[in-house]
Image 1 (cartoon, rainbow over the protein chains, first blue to last red):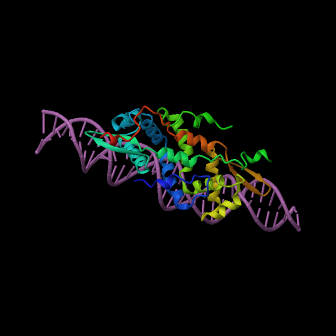
Image 2: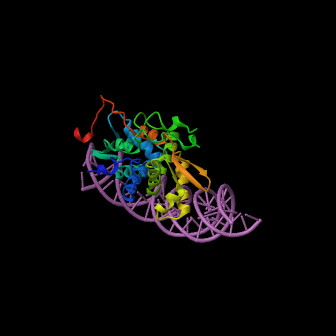
Image 3: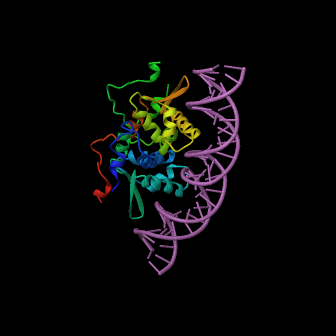
Amino acid sequence: MIDQDATCCPGLAAAPLDDERATELARVFKALGDPVRLRLLSMIASRDGGEVCVCEMTPAFDLSQPTISHHLKLLRQAGLIDCERRGTWVYYWVLPGALDRLAGFLTTPQTVGETPQTPEATA
Amino acid sequence: MIDQDATCCPGLAAAPLDDERATELARVFKALGDPVRLRLLSMIASRDGGEVCVCEMTPAFDLSQPTISHHLKLLRQAGLIDCERRGTWVYYWVLPGALDRLAGFLTTPQTVGETPQTPEATA
DNA sequence: GCCTTGGATCGACAAACGTCAACATAGAGA
DNA sequence: TCTCTATGTTGACGTTTGTCGATCCAAGGC
């Protein structure tokens, strides 16, 4: 489905990113770089059942329905969420592993034996 | 120094983000939402000494020097890196904890007792 | 002092983004 | 089938972003 290895394994601090992988990852982070999308994602991720109806998200914002739909589409294109129509309504959920893969990419390895602190401590 | 609690504690899946916190976080993710900045950050984070001279980063891209300087400024404004002039050159390093705080925010709690899988499994 | 070099800032411009109103589409129910 | 409601899509518009050339500032060497 999604190319997992592209956003998972190496880690930002493991080695300098090549251009291609950086472009892929930037698309995902760009999707998170908007307050509305961040709130939408949080709204879905924090829901007990794991899924939220659009009809519940739209009135939570001071924005038009097309705008919310647009943001949801971007989150979906970024591989962070997915949706399904169920009768009249459409439900969204967070794709399992997507956020954790991103988190893993950001986590620094805590490698001992390297300079663990800010250079200003040595200046 | 940096307002840590703003980007650290609650976690995206803990509760729906309020607008203010979403705006703060979106600024940081937006800083990561560009391939050049991602590569710059990775170049700094993956360096053994922990710091990299601008004179080393600029020629690694097919971009003008002002553009690189601009991207570094955005990363700095996002609280991800900091810099220091040392004689003729300027060195950048990753702010300790910044990436890990972000990672912690993205990590889903793996709370047992909730629906652990995609709704399509139940549909 | 002057000149050179590394890096940041400014001003401008095209491209991308966020937003909306208008329209299109998919089910549900009469 | 026809209508109504819930969402997605399209086209347009103002704002933001990424990029560059030109310029400015800081530090070193002469």
